[in-house]
Image 1 (tube, rainbow, N blue to C red):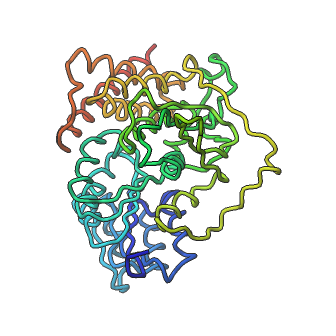
Image 2 (cartoon, rainbow, N blue to C red):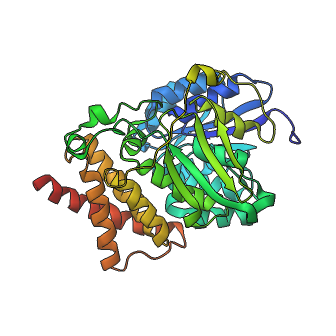
Length: 395
């Protein structure tokens, strides 16, 4: 590795599943990495505990209401604390060799862009950055000379087998999906499902929102949009295959008949370690893959009749411009309404579809050119989604 060690690391979203796994990977190589900045949305206690263990220079909490609790917990440690979006954005821009962008939701966009604008290496685990503002983010990365590394297991898999020197030979990029907890359920059973059933993912341990997205397959649709921005491919070159074992994470099919795949135990520490150590590789505590123990790998086509969210995301990718931004915001509102039991499981897709149709009628699908444009589309979608939820709840 050409950079001097230890590498200075900022983790945006340190208390979430990606942040926790990142810290675990870093703990295996204390001479290689030094944690210099951390942030979280609102969990002041967990953030303070991490700070006490790792002693970063700066700690930021997005929720300004938690500023006092964070400052009290770290009083006397000499660690600087701050709160709010501006402080979060400043943290993203602080001098670092690697910034892990793992704050979920729209709150992660500004600090991730700030990191990109410094020209550093940014490991992106925040879907919203590329889904809502992919063209803007990648243009900024190119201008600043930043290196974007994908943390999502599927995109990281593609990153590992994507041959940049053979672009003309690439015919298809295939993302795999576990199928979620409802892979074999019929529509009637899915319609009656509550959050308790939808949160039981068969393979991965994740936050509530992304787990619901996996149950609807919206997660895979959002990943298709991300892949479009991460790799030089057309929308029609991107596809999804359901693979219940979650061992094959992504494939690239080439014109010579080769299909290169990345395989691994379903553990986020593998793609995180790949990003942190890139272009090198280093050991992790991940269980080695044993294909004999697994026995068989199966694949099937996704059912767009039962999993309408995936079809909506594919349509938004083909539509382009601001459609993915609207899709993402509408879905986020609908998912939380479902988690609060205000709408049914299948109503998530119905809500998203209503927002997209409303935006087309209102001519609100223009390409966002700035963060203000992204915010305007996001606000429109959220407002319209709340109206749709009220109507669906009364139905």
